Image (cartoon, rainbow, N blue to C red; front, top):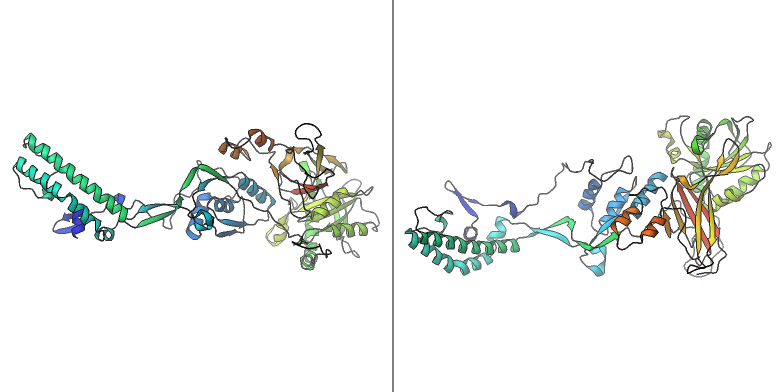
Length: 542
């Protein structure tokens, strides 16, 4: 109680002493279960996805439940808000989505994100050690009562305060105790008394200021986990991450000779195929295959095909005259592989009448399978890759409508490689993406299409045949304030503006071939449909 008195933390209300608490003693208030500041407003960040969650909601949940370095899983990726927030706050993350559009948006959002650089608690231990956070003192009655430094400070200033009080009482002819001295001087006091009053207040204020500093210094500190200390001289971009789909059927050994490649055991994946073929066939007959610019391959009939294992349906289109069509469905939970393409082609050669269109429909295509479909030349027969909408995997939730866009034609990527033979960049390669070659449903031929509908494309200059590692990433359809423009704005001094502009185009930066002498280009169109094209290089290794 004596220390509260010395700290001027007691006040009398009636006959009862009360504790004086200032707003600055603890200016922080804990969040409760009613959040009024998490609504998306017109002044917030723009939405890139129709059901995009406001980042502050995810941020608050993440900070309440995880520490830096923890792993966060979001099985409904959407626009990648959870991954974006986790990256910002130093959490590891895994996010999943069945929508190709969502995955593409999330990739772009992460790759072009810029974050504050937070000071680490222990630099040598990495982000797992946590950040250096802002703290605030939490001044309580207990912390004041248990602070012995207050006695020392009060005793140090006591002679000066008593001398100033005595001088005031002498000049004003009063007998004030310390706590009785008014803040304002009496108008009837002489000038000497006013000066003594002013000196007394100044002496007492110096003592109080020193006591207040001691109270703050010795009060327990509360850590603000949503306010880490940021190094304003640095900025941070997203760390390396991978985009993974169906695992590769083979892996490269770490040491030793490469063993003979065994066929992948996809029996479990193909079990679902036979169970869902009737549903897919009915949907294909009802909805047809969507092409570009509103074109469509419509079917007059589509029937099960008996006596074959790799071909699952045949029918004819509504064209005049109708075209004969054969369809091979990929597995439900695995990629359509090169073996299925090979075996389906053999079976198709024995069909009578011969099909004019052979369609391979799958949720995902193995790169080798896609390459075989694109490069197979069968006179009189057109081979098509058809992307199956992942909504077909939740068919029980989907309404049966002829307007459903369940099957899409996949264009064949058209690229050009040019070897630079002169100048400082001699020996390097320039790659141009010319667009897609699409099947024209009106003429029955494959026609070239421009690059206007390419939303994103990635180049792996040393492709291993399994995992595409993008060394260069381009956003041709990005606006002035989208894509790499965000980085350009934030990193003006550190980034080559000419290269940033090049990353909006369809021509790569010069590159040297890698050890594997193989490149791969993944192109994603405005519908979110991905296509991969590979090329072998015949250029001396860099």
